[in-house]
Amino acid sequence: MTSTDNQPPTEATETAVSPTNNRRRRLLVLLTTLLLLFAAILGLFIRYINRPAPLPELLIPESELVYPPHYLFSIYGLDQPVGVTLSPDGSRIYAAESGGERMVRIFNRAGDEIDAFAPPRTRPGERAPVYLAMDSAQHLYVTDRLQHAVFVYDRDGRYLDALIAPDLSISEYVAQHMGGLQPDMTITYNNFYSNIYVQIPGSNEQTLPTPVFDDPWSPLGIRINAQDKAFITDAKTQTNQVHEFSLPDGNDLIDWHQVNATAVPFGATGEANGELLYPNSAVADSRGRIFVSDGNNGRISVWDAQGNFLFNFGGGNGEESVSLPRGMAINGRDHLYVVDAVGQNIKVYDVSADEPAFLYTFGDWGLDDGLFNYPNDIAIDDSGRIYIADRENHRIQVWSY
Image (cartoon, rainbow, N blue to C red; front, side, top):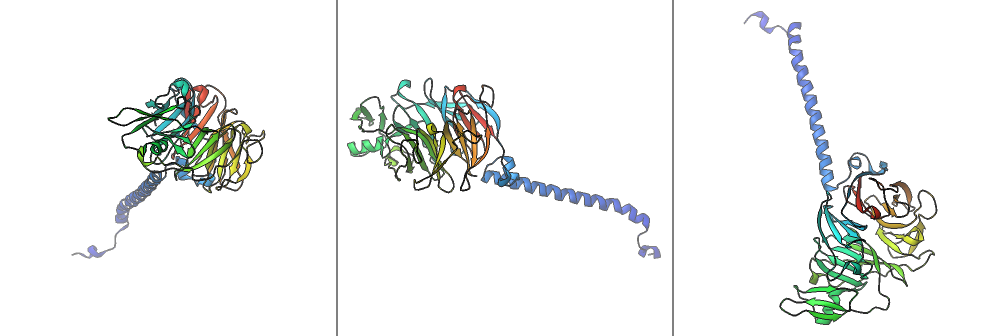
């Protein structure tokens, strides 16, 4: 070994090695950056799977997000739609028509029609579906103004039952008069005729007289929250009020026929505080307060969880005021969306605090994309998509953030 073998590296040797070290460092920084970026994207993806939301809400704190949605597209092939709701996972859209055949139509998320249905033994002039809602077991509830009933179907439109009074379903009435129900029994009902028709496999069809009510209820609006608590507005002549139900479990007719109101209804007919005129929708916020679109009084009426009147808001002539409030929806941030049928727009309020705060309005009158012609109802899915029944434009409009 020569003496030069133990000598320190010369300047020439350092110069030769330095570019390799620099490349390694750059590659390490790049790899670290890519790993961090991948972790961030993976975190956003996991968060979206657990709680779907628009991308801005995933990136920015919710408290800083206050902006109107934008128009996406419209679903056509409907005749004067007045009600709209969604399946729990948002994959199906249900819309009720007030014109033509007066059907309930099912669409997929892309707006393609899947099917259409109506109450059995009814003709178009004998039915008037308005609002709809679906529970966690995917029972679809449809209010009907002419039938004075809430019809109940499965997710595919198969008829199951009907609520003909706040404390009475058709299946419960049949069970009382026939000593119970059978799993394969089918029951049909039409308020315009005097009979309930019962078909048991292998037997002749039987009839029962329909019950007679002194002041039949007139269900109009229906909303169901995540706890399967339903709020149904009753616009009958003598008493305008709101009923609250805890819906039964089960997927079959025989499993859930005992339907009873679990809370005392609240409201009365009139224009004073604590009174309602043609209430359309009732929704509850995260604190249990109930907001009612008091249609013909041109305001939103607020009640506590026990049915005690608290206050009104939305009246008057300002930007935050409503003219003819119809359908409503509330999201996970306690933002209340109110369809103003005469104002031809959607009003949005933050109701998370003691006093509601007006946020913004979106929409205006017209026939083009993103414009409304007598809108009537609204539904919101977990990803932030908004569906609006645009009645006189014969479509469901889809908006998003």
